[in-house]
Image (cartoon, rainbow, N blue to C red; front, side, top):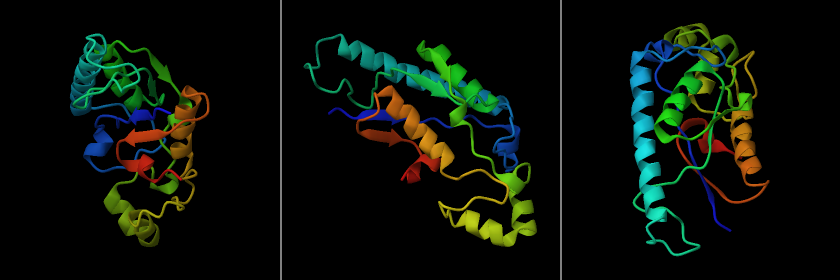
Length: 182
């Protein structure tokens, strides 16, 4: 069985990212740096998509082989959270690649409860015990009032499974929340 490879892209920078303020479920748009980053990743992914498409039609790949070479991938779907920062990033990718963009609210960033809207320094000062657990990256813990820490990871895997008819092998490229999928 051929593996489904996921390429995960984090949204571009927001004003709150720049000042180290937790966003979570608060809907913040990209700042100018984030818009530039989104356009750049869109162009980079478009080049990989185009190279793979050209290779797959050049006869250089035997049937049944992966149509990838040198990091070039042919993308088939583009799915994004409907939060503004993710949607703006995904829209830049869609424009560059020509892929249809689908929004899935299940991919929204998790809620961070009392941490949302707070800066890292404020959190460390006001809630030192909670800060320590968060910094320890305890996968079963979430800030008080926050959402289930596994919801986003499971949602991403469910989206991938639904695209493959419920089964298959998954490989993910990316960092952050998807590094600890159970």
